[in-house]
Length: 332
Ligand code: IDC
Image (cartoon, rainbow, N blue to C red; front, side, top):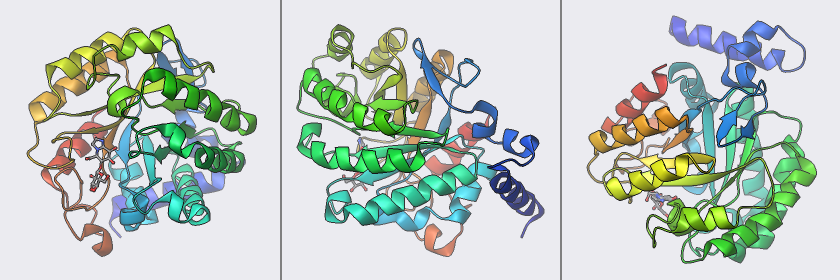
C-alpha cells in the first residue's frame, strides 16, 4: 500500500471509530465532520453553523449495472484522493432496478449509505425514475422505499433524499403533487433531512420545455421546507439557453445540480470542457452544489474510469472526462 493510501486508510479507520465518541479531530477532517447536518437557508445549502456550503462529488451509475464500481476501495479513492464531499447513489426504479427486487436494492442502498458515512461523505439517495416520466407512476414504491431508508438513517447527519431523478412529459403541478405526498413519509422518520426535488423536462427547470418552469415552481412551490430543486445538464448538448435558465433560477430558488456531464446528453460523445467550465464557474459563483455523472467504468465517455477498471481495482485509470472532473473536485 502506498504511504498516502495507508495514511488515508488510517484516517478512515479513525473516523469509523470516532463515529460514536472518538477524537473530534479525525471526524473534523471529513466533509461531514466539518459541516454536520445540512439545511436550506434562503436559496443556499448551509452547514450546521448556518454557513453556506458548496458540495462537489460524483454519482454512481445504475446499481443494477455498475455496483462493482462502488466498493470500499473505490470509495476510499473518492473520499481520500479525489477529496469529494458527496456521493450520489443512483438507484434506478425501472430498467432492471428497484421494481425487480425491492428488498435487495433497498439493502444495497443502505449498505452504500453506511460506507459513505464511514468515510465522512454526504450521501444522496437518488430515486432514479426516468421512464415513465410521471413520478406518480412509482408513487407507492417511492413511499415504501423512502420510509425504509429514512427510518434506517434517521440519526445520521449526512443523508439527502432525491425523490425524483428526471420527471418528463408532466406539468410542474404533477411533480409538486408527488413531492407533497413523498416528503411527509421521509420527514416522519427523518425530520431534518434535505429533500431534492426533480423539475420539469428531465430536471432542466423547464429549459428543455417552454422555458416557464422556474415561474411555475415559484407560483406553486413544494409545501414542505428544507427542500431544493434539481438542475441537470450535459455541456456538449446544452448551451446558452440552459445556462441562462440556471442563472435566472439561482437567485430565486434553492438549486442543487445532482447530475451533469461534460459530454452529450447520452452520457457519451465528445466532451465540451469549455462549456462545462462556464457552468462550473456559474455554480461556484452562486455556491451551488454539484454532482457529476458518473463514477463507473461504463464504455461511454461520461464514465470516469476506463473499461474494466472496477473489476481490476485500478481506480487511477481514468478517461479524459475523469481526469477533468477529478481535478475540479480536488481544487479547493
Ligand atoms: C444513461 C446511462 C446509460 C444507460 C441509460 C439508461 O449513461 O449507460 O443506458 O442511462 O437509461 C440522464 C439520466 C441518466 C442517463 C444520463 C446519460 O438521469 O440515467 O444515464 N442522463 O444519458 N439524464 C440526462 C442524461
